[in-house]
Image 1 (cartoon, rainbow, N blue to C red):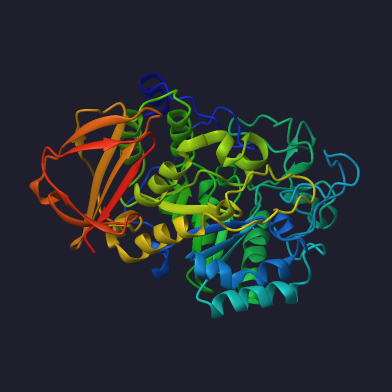
Image 2: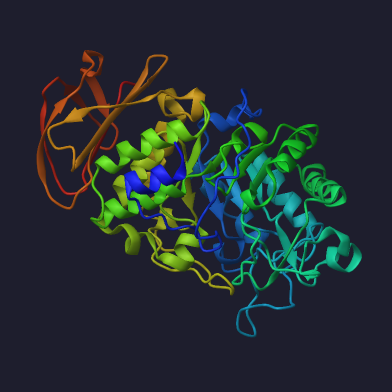
Length: 469
């Protein structure tokens, strides 16, 4: 199924992240059999994105390290740390006094002094590992700052456009004018590729990090990622997350996970009344045809781009936030929590300047703990080939109610959700009698007898999550 079909048939208005070109083009190479290796722990992992600058009053690695025990108790498995490198000074877009974009990397081998030292990062990773947590770094391979160490020492690493250095180029080879603070790297040069792989290997060797979240991975040729993956795995089996949705070949070249941007856009539209629950059926069919078997995506209602540029969870999802977080944890991918969600974050955290989270009473922690526990303990919810296939449960209210079951090796989950601001009475019409039975209601701590043609009264945005264990 091509992208034109997606646009015309689904009529889903896709809004890319702040830095992603507006009109993605599929530059996929042929998808071959076999997915990249993945660490065993990735199959049931919950990610947590940490914006170091804003995470604590200190705004440094120590501020993160101090909260590691709390994050472990929350139930997360993987701490994704936003870029750790020094930030360029030349051509900064923001007003004087701001700290700049963390995605404008000045030196791939150094640590932003605002965050601490390399020794501080090592300590953070070591203590995270001692608690059973993994740590991945946000990596920016497509471009550097205009005053980067590489521009000074290796100008041959950089793209020439009309004979001069250039801002990053989109998939059509056109300059992205808004990215005026960064300079494009040339992956047509084998020396650039070698240098980038060595820089990534450095952090595995020196700090024992567990993988990378790769910024704008699709603007780097996919054959580079095929080259990079075995080089990284030669040091340790890493976990790789692609911030890109339009390259199915990423799943066979390098990456274990990609971004669920379409999922985010569809769920926001449903929350705002622009689409109905049936849009998830269409999205599900599209994703499973577009990507290779066994793929998995990252699902979230907030991340640094969404929060800073588009709005808080309350602004974007309103009263529907909880039900869509439930779906992020149960649908078919890997869930992520953005820092502050466990505290019902109502701040749009500044992107270019220090703006610490104003932590309160962590009221949403029990909610997320239940979801994390459910993901860890019910194999049906594991990612990709390790989890159970999503099977839709038909109802007599398809525009409002979205219900499904997943089963894996005897573990079963049932989710029934009202994706509407209106109450409704719904009759379940499961095709498979196996769905019937006695379940534990995850959020009510009670048992529920599920029967065929069962009738339920659901409040606006109400969700019921049932498990057989």
